[in-house]
Structure formats: structure tokens, C-alpha cells
Image (cartoon, rainbow, N blue to C red; front, side, top):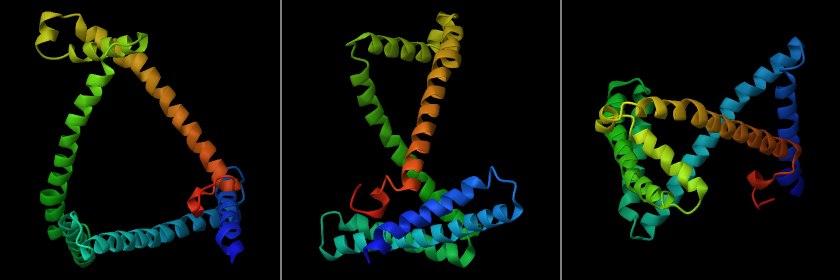
Length: 208
């Protein structure tokens, strides 16, 4: 039983990952065909994982409703919305008129409202970040001011600011973002390697 819960998932992960990764480097048609089949299995497994996730959401919110917690009304709305989208989607697919109406007039406005509330958090974070404490904060504040001066009234009064802010955006900012992207990619590769060889076992439950 312990082997099935701990060792078998690691073996399956390692073998599957090795087959898929090696298919990009080995010019063997049979190998490539089997790797493509594994990728198709991945879609099926993802569908089962989605169903499992839906079951977890239903169980969580139904428990809150049963215990009559303070957030129970929100759980009711969540479950009703889930059921409504699921039923309409299965009946008409996601291209149906009813589903598109739900998407355009319910989901999108709710998402826009959720994104709008982040304005207050961004404002609070900007206030804390722009308090000058060291040289890095000075660079951050100057860059932010240049970005804000590139449009509107200040751009017409100070005609050189759009060119300066464009240089900041094209050169230092782009270089920094590329460094962050490369670092994130290397981190993803490293974490994926740890999962493949079995060093990272958090996805199996119980931590490392």
C-alpha cells in the first residue's frame, strides 16, 4: 500500500516525463507516436482532475452551508453558479447563446469588479514602496514618475518626458523583465526536474 501511494507515482512520473522529453531529441517514429499518445492521455487525466476539483469545491461549500457559517450565503451563490454554468455548458456547449450570455453579462462583469478592487491594494503597495529608504527605492520612484509623466498634461508641458520614459521602458525595464522571465523559467525547469526524479514529493501529500 505504501508503494502504491509513494513509490509508484514517482516511477510513473519519471517514466512518462522521460518518454515525452526524449521524443524531442530522438528521431524514432514509434517513440514519438507513443509520446504523443501519452500527451493525449494527459488531456483525459486533466478532465478527471477537473471533476475531482469540482467535487472538492462542492464538498467544501456544502459543509459551510450545513454548518450555517457566516459565509454560507456566498457558498450558496457559488454552488448555484457552478451548477448553472455546468448545466448550460453541457446542454449547449460553450458556444451556445445562453452560455455566451452568462459569460458576457455575469462572469465578465464580476471579473471586472474583482480586478477593480485591486486598485486599492495597488495604491497601498505603491505608497509603501515609494517611501524612500535606500537607493533602490529612489530608482523605483524616479522610474514610476517618468512613466506617469509620459502621458497627459505633463507630456505637453515637458516634451522630453515621453522620449525618456520610452527609453526607460524599452531598455532597463525590458532587460529586467527578461531577466525575471529567464529566472522563472530556470526555476520551473529545476522544480520540474525535482518532481521527475522524485526529490520533490509535495504533490503526493505530506510535504517533502
